Image 1 (cartoon, helix red, strand yellow):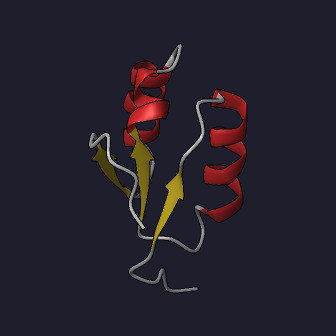
Image 2 (tube, one colour; image 1 turned 45 degrees about the horizontal axis):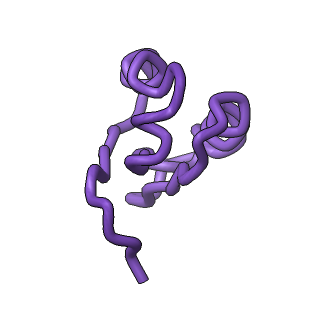
Image 3 (cartoon, rainbow, N blue to C red; image 1 turned 180 degrees about the horizontal axis):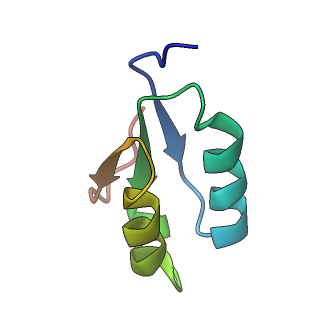
Length: 68
């Protein structure tokens, strides 16, 4: 299946939940967007480095304002 140009938003500070989201969608997505909350959470930076080794793009949204 060809991956679509879609990013999935991982807006959780929970590392296990982030892994679940990424693993469940990785076959179908082009990339993953991690929010500031995840980046600043315990283990967030290290996890993003590990996710970077997977076969998709990483977008780090470091803004503090919620996107509507």
